[in-house]
Amino acid sequence: MLNKSIIAFFILFFTTNYSFAKTFSKEKPKYLWFDAEANFKRFASKDSISYYLEKAKSVGFNQVVVDVKPIYGEVLYKSKILPPLTTVKGKVVHRDWDYLQYFIDEAHRLGLKVTVSTAMFTAGHPGTSEGLVYKDKRWDGKTCLEYFPNGQMFDIRDDKQKVGAFLNPARKDVRKYALSIVREIVKNYDVDAYALDYCRYPADNSDFSKETHKAFERYLGKKVKNFPQDVYTWNVDGTKNPGIYYKEWWAFRSHVISSFVKEVRDNIHAINNKIKLEYWAASWIHAIYGQGQNWASPKSDFSLNYPWGSEAYNETGFAPYLDTFLCGTYLERIYGMSDPESIEYGIARAQKLIGNDCSVFGTIYALNHKTNIADAVNICLEKSAGLMVFDIVQVIEMDLWDGIKEGIERAETQQ
Image: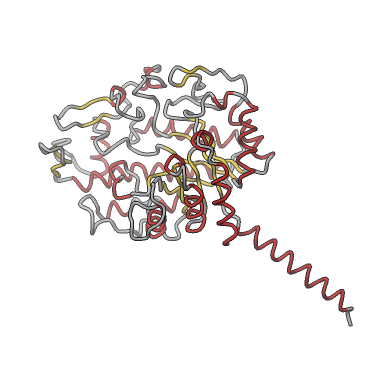
């Protein structure tokens, strides 16, 4: 018979190790986003990158998102396809080292995982006329055309109000170019995940180019004689008057984006099937149909409650192509399952619309939570499969580190 002390030892050993394994397995992904544009000067030195990665780890983050291709269309990695990003709003930084590689090396040294992010279809900043489409004539005629109430078609490159100069996602050459960037990064960098940003149309009034007209006809399998009038016309008050192909139009645009997301997934997995595909979008899905962003499951039905919804639109849901949906609950209010403007509601809605097709992470905009970021962090970790905080620039400037740490510790204590 075993000695009682030996039995007690084994009981204690297995109980302790089971408890440790249980705690370890429950740790959820906690991302901090490093925006390229907002932090362009701050991360001009390696020391600064190392310092803030260590800071991120110290408060509980276990993964970082490194933006290497912001809206300008130029990049912060060693590329044979695109020029380096050296100027942002007049600020000039020349690096003789690989920005992305340094982030990866330092993050992995610290035990942090790395998601790389690129703005997929933007290639310039209309407000400052900086970026790829303002320097390289091969992009002439390939940016989105906006359709205004006065009937005018306007090149988005010249629309100073727009956040980015979007290339037309329906063009084969644009898609080929975008996919080449994805492949280049995945082939050359040891990243853990790839997050698609600006993988959409800029707004519901673009693109209305001849190329899109032809692509729409191919999608329908018939001619559209009166374009864009057969899609919609504008009322005097700025609302839309639906044409005969109104619903088909929104399904077509969503198909353009959904099919591209699938192509990205297939291209990534052909190179390294361990790299996860992630996608950020606003949580208010009913308001972004015009951007082609149907991040829901194809099983979700929008045809009953929305005038733009249809069975064809439902089928474009791209959640099955993702590993993670980064649910953009960039909202000020935190709690309230009956409040559509709360983070809690936004997460629950996404989970309902996605089902088991992919994981859902709650994501927060730090600027909204100067005094209550601990609560915002906690609700994301309590109610969803993970957390993303955007962006480190606000975390630094508003000194939100302690609040984030408090929120993480509270959530992990409750698990």
